[in-house]
Image (cartoon, rainbow, N blue to C red; front, top):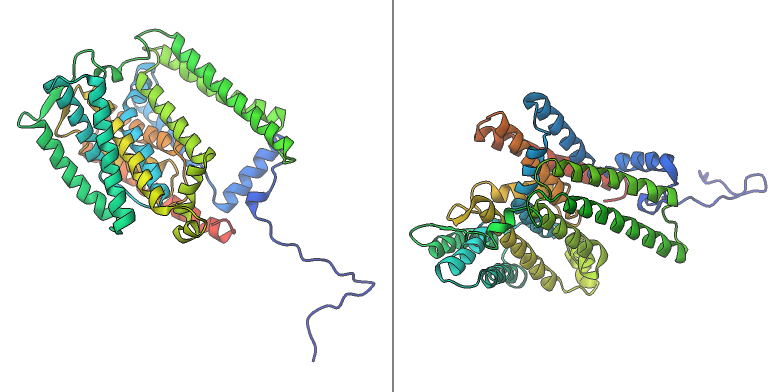
Length: 425
């Protein structure tokens, strides 16, 4: 019986089969050609990263600047960086929950009840405002722990638990505020000053200092990482590549500082939001706890067999998201001048969820970063601000934001399918 196999001979020596190489293990060559090659490989495998969001931000800026003529003015850009703080902090918490492949529908209500507790304790009860804030944030974290307990220990779906929480904490918010329904912030108090500029209006030094600090920290981190990889015998970024990446960040940071200083200087909400994003990004990418979150989101059974306490990770994630939502609620209260029954309602929660997804965090779990929240909320706030400038109805804003969110989810689904077909899913 004949066979299709070829028997090795002296004329046709046997050659070992070449195994398929996981694209994640490929070492990128240095220089511009290496970036181009890596970019093509990522596009082919469906790993688009933040590219769609960056392109979207550029298109939004170009469109609204051409329509209004002053969208890119310093005062408007400064206002955008202030307004993103509250929903942006909530969106960072959403990223943590989405990394588990879950959802938290209660974060808007938690933001509202945190602001309500703070205002009532500080204004009506006369408690020290700093202590009132700590108590309110602790209450938010406790609420997150309660949600996580029912989800991780009892087995109630997160959707149901947080939906019930959304209703319950909204009711608690109304109860705490009482019949008046509104409590104004203390004049020149802690909450009121959250919406100010870093250590005073008009002082331009702080924007430059923050920009230079970011450049220095980034450069130091890149050099340390390259040295560690070299010591371990692993390929790392070349000096020229590090210089190129640092130069790109320097241009972005210094242009941003210059733009902010053309108006009122560095907004304190932007500083705190950036600080939270950097800290949480470090936790997710550089700590064992962060790796456990990705592991649980990637596969619960595999994580459990690897010795990870899945229930503990889940509960802690809901605690983190609730705490960040509470902090975001304080920024919203600061910007509107009071805590009221409407705080945290409306499109606050949907904007936070949309920001995380639009920024690139997967709804299916196991993929995303906290920078996604920052990029996504910039997209949403830019759209909202631009439409306000052209006096578009709120219904139009909702429809456009919904369309952008749907496009992001479709892109995520297509990306995952492409990555699976290329062996990376």
